[in-house]
Structures are given as structure tokens and as C-alpha cells.
Image (cartoon, rainbow, N blue to C red; front, side, top):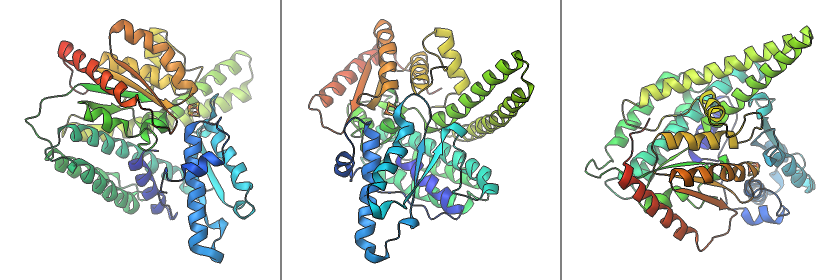
Length: 422
Ligand code: SF4
């Protein structure tokens, strides 16, 4: 999904002895479209194409030495009503349709067990892997936030992209060296040095710009090829942008498991089914412990970086759930990313953002729900709101739509100003 996070998590895999690399992406879209029917969500087409092109190139370069058992694709999945959980099953069917690819594996790490790893790493090291992987997700979010904070104000055009690219590679090396040892302090020391260096790229004489918040479907809003680099386009028309984080989704899946286990516990206690209640209690404690750990790490990282530079903070998922309940907009019972997007928009609104963009694959169910609930509220509150669906085609009106949105955001900025990052 997001390039930085992919490189850092590959570093974590390598530190645990897995020979992981980040695949080229978006170059195999023709293959992805050829082997899907058109009814699948766009990220499914992109990732299917990426896998097929990678394997095609491997077969061409290795010839008879190509061994399908040498490969395992890391492909997260999710349960719930939308189609994300079906991607890897569909991709399995596609791979099985080629006799020589039947033994290629797909490592699906399901959010059903909060991305607990099964089989890819020795069982006794799984917990450590998850801790290091989560930490890499948070650090990846910080590097992304650094990019969006510096680039609109850079002294030298293009300098930030090069700087972040180098920083990403440095951090991936750090995760490879220190991830398995869980030497997170050393990684944080390096992150601080990167932020200090990044600050020197900012032109202090440039005035603040309108602040735009992004929500939406996690793949589209973070995959710059699929979203045609929408953040850069918004910046070109005068924005400073903050996108929702990846850690938020990871925390959401864990939070949801705690919530579901609590529901099971209550129901079984009411029915005097104590053996089942006990098993739910164990789940509450286990997932609750994971969530506590994740929140502590999240706080630790943001506490270290925010005194150095005013980067946007991250939301607590429990707080987002309370926001939904308070405003009676949606329910965590219904699940999907709409929980995060709807509450995220409310948070941006309360934080005084000058405009909000919802980025998603064409026909995405949770993002369409988000739009239908939030657009009337945004109209009422007179906050510029942009729905931006993508399906791989280039729409001639897209740029004009973004310019119009940015014009409205600028008017909002002139009338209301903007707050500092919370
Ligand atoms: S979140 Fe949207 S794009 Fe992703 S699987 Fe669900 S419906 Fe498809």
C-alpha cells in the first residue's frame, strides 16, 4: 500500500530471517485487468497484476531454475462485509489456473486474529515480530507525515521527495538490524535525527497553507500510483495535506476484536454459560493487552517527535468510536472502514481543517457509505468536501475538480484561518 510502510515492514521481515523484498507496483495493471472480471475492487486488480507480473519476470529471468515454492506473497486480508477478505482467495484461484504457479503461496495475515502471523515465522517469535512490525507501521506513518509537513514548504523544489526516499531506506536498514532485537530506542534516535535534518528543508518565510484532511479506503488513499498522486496534486494547488494513518487501521482491527469479545462475554454470562464466558474473557484480556501495547508504543513515538516538529497526531480508536456514538452517525457494530472515515472526518472538522477529501476505489462500499452520511453534514457546516473515486482511468475533469475544491478550501482558510496540528 504505502511505499514507506512496505519498505519498513520488509526490513522487519528480513531481521527475522525472511528474505523479503518490496515488489514493483502498478506496472502489471494490464495483467490484473486481464485476470479479473471487472466486478472486483480496484485494489484487487492492482495487487493481482503486481503478483502476476512479478512471477512472469522471475520465470523469464530464472528459466528452468524457477521454483514456485521459493515465493510467498504477503497479502493482508480482513473479515467483514466488504470484499477485502476475498482478494487473496481470488488470487489463489488465479494462481491455481496456471499449473506452474500452483505451489506459489500467499501468506494471508487475517485481521480476524488482529494480524497474528501463522506459519511465516516460528511460533515463539510471532509476538516479537508483531511488535516490531507494528512499530514499523507507526514509524512509516511518521515519515509520511514528515513528507506532507515539509514538501509544501520546501526551500528547494523536489528536495523533500529525495530526502524522504533516503530516510526510508535508512530506516528500513535500521529495522533490519534492530527490529528482531526490539531495540526501538535506537530506531527512535535515528528518527529524531531524520526529523532534525528534514526541518532544515523548510523555508520559514513561507506562510501557512490551507489544511486538507484525507480519509477513505486504506489502499487507495495510500497507494500513490492508484490515486494518481492525489496528495501531490492537492499540494500543487496550495494545500498542506494530512492523510489518515495505517496504524489507525491496525489499532481498529485490534479494538474491534476487544469489542466483539466483550459482547460475547456479556451474552454468555447472561446465559450462565461459564465455560464459553471464560474463553471470551481470555480473548478480552489477550486482545486488550495487544491494544494497550499498541497505544503505549504509539504515544511513545509521537511524544518523541512532536516536540521537534508540529506533525499531525494520531487518533485513538476508542475516541473515534465515542465520536460516532456521540453524534449518532454510524456504529462499530456495522464495521468496515466507514467507522474510521466518518469519525475521522468529524475529527478533522473539530480540528479546524479547511477541507476534507474522501479517496476510494470506484464502487467501494464503506467509502460510499461515508460519503452519503458525511456530505450533507459537510454542506451544512460549509466545509469543502471532495469525493475522489479511482478505477485506473484518467478522468479529464479530475484536476478541475481538485482546483475547484482547493479554491473553496482557500476561501474557508481566509475566513476561518487554521489551527496548529493537534
Ligand atoms: S474497502 Fe472498498 S475497495 Fe476495499 S474491499 Fe471493501 S469495498 Fe472493496
